[in-house]
Image 1 (cartoon, rainbow, N blue to C red):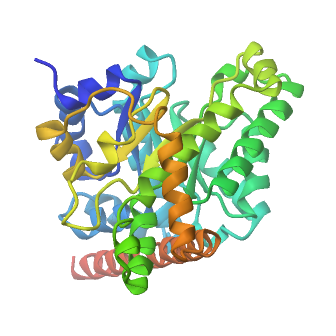
Image 2 (cartoon, rainbow, N blue to C red):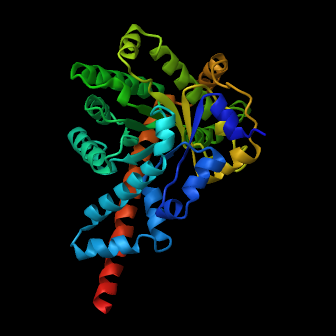
Image 3 (cartoon, rainbow, N blue to C red):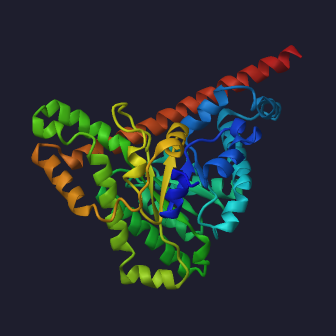
Length: 374
């Protein structure tokens, strides 16, 4: 019998897990998710790592060793997170090889405090790539204005990139251009383009959260009727932009040189409104050459009861345009929405990083206390 995750795979959607911890790695649960749930990749972020560190004692031995060698908090975070990503990359190595490098990917994020620092982002990405030292790693770089040239520069070095925190169609087109420019520079350097992979992470549920709040404030029946429609419509139109980008002569030249498409990735696919179907951002965003990165609860819901009926995107463009036009018609300012979401997203990433630093600092202090008591 097939299940919804298998149906997604058949439709060209790769299911990645939005979670990673040493518990998942050492218990064998990550391998189970691969074999029993069809997971073919993993994404991480500072919140995920902070949660992992605060639960159980899987990190205790490493933290003790870090204290003994005099590591500060920043170094400890770097070593702990890169070790987990390296270990996960090894778990996914068979999938990486069997899919020709398309899947079996594990993403790790540059320090979010560098989101407005192009050169700092480039340096951080290179260091992460060299330290993890696995061909199936991906370095997450936010799609801030300052992040765009960093994406180009990092791709030009032959490093695979997960572009994160994309909300607007305009910014997504700039991300596509940054990727193509990076490939062109890599080609000029003689780098094998077939070794470079990229995904562009388009956030979905946060768009609905922000726009629904505005629709509620507007309060008309027409406005209320548009609730929880913007996130999907925005993502569907992003896929149209992707299709347009791979229909160009510029892309054809790169593809002939061995380049891989930059796949759209649907992020933030756990519903925030409990009144919505828990698989909404899965079943309505099905198309070939896409990735859906799911938190554990969404993965289980998808496996249990999602109904996947094939491509739900490419025939939707006219309706998606109507939705976005109707939103403008009732007074929702799209440009303001995506600007607010990007600012909030960067702030949340930086706050999460601060929480991760705080968690690691606490663990280091406990390790010092253990050492003093021995």
